[in-house]
Length: 125
Image 1 (cartoon, rainbow, N blue to C red):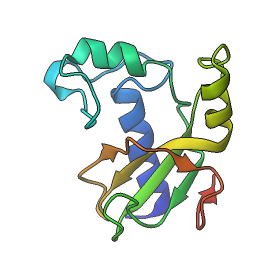
Image 2: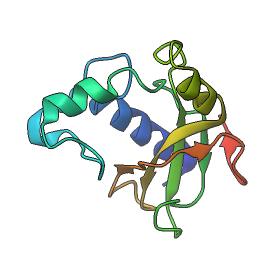
Image 3: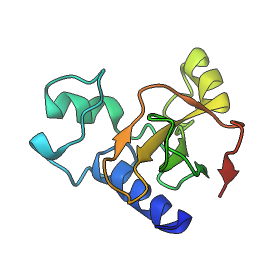
């Protein structure tokens, strides 16, 4: 799988799971779950809605979670969503969130920790 395919898969993932300004297409138990998420899918959706931009900011040719082969696709926070929160606005200007996957584009997950927008090896899109 190449970089463009990894980015396309990650962009579909953030949209499907409701991280963007678009409605989530995944519902109920199909909605991805992070380790820090609420058990209730509706609560998860409300919390994450419109937190990320829908297009990828950058990509790393490795899986940042497993530190092995794969892809890490980074998304910028939606600054408009956090404009009234100075602490989050500051964080959003320095970090993003990342979808990680194995080399074949499977086993997708959203990292619950931020990724620096100037991380070593991050190729901007």
